[in-house]
Structures are given as C-alpha cells and as structure tokens.
Image (tube, rainbow, N blue to C red; front, side):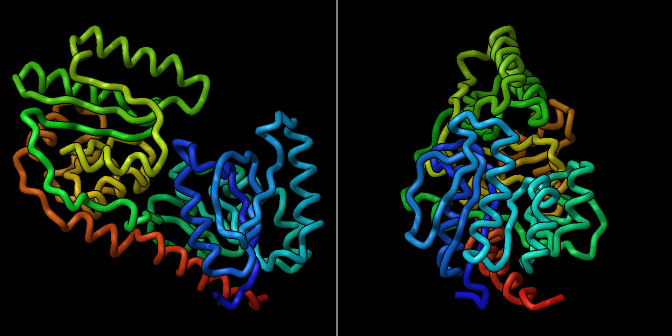
Length: 351
C-alpha cells in the first residue's frame, strides 16, 4: 500500500464488456492493490467483477438521468463521501477537473488528471490550471506546455497481452489486422486504398477490422466504408468483425501476422502497443510511433501506396521480440500504477 490510503477515481464507464473502456477494469484491479479503498465515480455502470475494496458509484447515465441530474449527483457524492478519499484521479475527461477542483481543493484533496490525446480544448486548458499533476502517456499526448505534466507511458496489461506459447501455423495468405472504433479519425479509407493496390499486385491476404462506431454520427461512415470495400471487389478479403471485449482481442492479435495502425490521434495508441505485446509485426503512420518503430515500419499518413509498401516490407521481415520488450519496459500496467500511486503519495502533503 502507498502512503495515501483512499483514492477517488472519476471515469466515464465501468464496464468490462465495453469495446473502448473495458481496459480500465484491470487498472482498477491494480489500484486496489495500492490503496485501502478505491471509490469510483462513473457516468455509466455496466458489468464488472472487482476487489472488495473497490466501490463503484454511478451518476446514472445508464438509467437515462439528464445531465443536470448527473452533475448534481456528482457534487453531492464528492462532498458526501469526502471522508472516503484522500485524493482524486480524473481519467481522460478534463471537464470533471473543471467542475470539481474548487470543491476538492477546499476539502484539501489533491487533483490528478490522466489525459492522452492531441486535442487541446478550452476545457483542457482550464483543467491544466486547476489540476495539481497531469499524467500522460507520451510527450505528444498532452500538447499544452506545463510543468505539471509527468510522462508515464501507457498501461498495457502485459500479463494478458503476450504471445502464444504455441507455434503459430503459417497461413498461405497474409493475415492483416487493425483494431479501433470506426470513425474518420482512424483513417480507414487509406487502408482500403492500400488493400486495393495489394490485390491488384496479386498479393494473397485477408483483413480483419475489429471495432464499431462509438457515436451515432459514425454509423453512416461505417456503412460507406463497407460499400467502398464491396465496390472495389474486396468483400471476400475484408471482414468487419464488430466490437470485441478487451480480453477477447488477445487470440485475435496472436492469430494475425501484421497490425496496421493509421489513427490520426497524434499520440501513442493503446491498440498498437497491445499488438506489439502479443508479438505481432506492426506498421504505423502515427507521429508518436516514429520514436520506437524502425523507419521501414512507418508509412505516410494519407498515402495508400506508402502503406501498401510498408505491409510488403513487414511481410518480408523476420519476427522480432524487440517490440514486446519495448512495451514491457516502457508501457507496463503494473509499472504505471506503481508510478501513479508513488507520485500521489509524494504530493499528498505539498501545499
């Protein structure tokens, strides 16, 4: 246990079945080993199994509560349960720092924000002023200059995401994988364009796309992608697998050859690191990936030809354990949670 005994965590959803946020369950399990009590205040509550010292309280989004009621419940719980936490850890959503910091500071609670995205909003700028410490995964994932920022690496559960002990049976076709929500920011058009080039070149391959639209406005984008695949004659090569739970991804990573990452988030992507931890070959167009991938594994962001060439290079290259080693040494979940807990404990008595 760290010197700080009780922690309040603010997060969007606690649900092991959520395709985007299910990964946070192992975070809570690790936090439970570092604190006597972990109080989790979430917008939405789903299915989960957590240690007995983790208490989850929902603001009621899953019950259809209006935002005004959710906000009033937020303030009520933060004040009413003030004796049950020593500090606050806000996961990703800076708005909760903005609306809660004044109360927390009056109560003598330190405020820690975790944020990993290239977007810089007015809410984030204000949250930077109000938070005591800001944790981020990479220098590119928090783009406001601040002395409060601590770069920690991501939190990948490398005990879960690891290569199979069984020797993979080599397929006659190159098996390509990409994972992520279906949205324009993920740049799927470039992948489809690259696949058309590879098909015209006579390369045998199959592609698995894992994920689904997270927002209603992205559903039409997903349908346009599927229609584009059909129009190009790639329907027998491309499978849209839909949403998968975080732990369901492990056998998928293990059974494919190359992971293609083309997100425009501008920061290190969690799915890329998961694929690396599972021993996959990977290629990426992400700016942050250039720091740890070899030049031949990086392709130009909006260039299908560049991606197609990178896929061919990866197919011809030998499998290396270096990528998994990088994740274990720099983005391991156990190391991350220990770092967060130690930092919170060291800042507890600072004025």
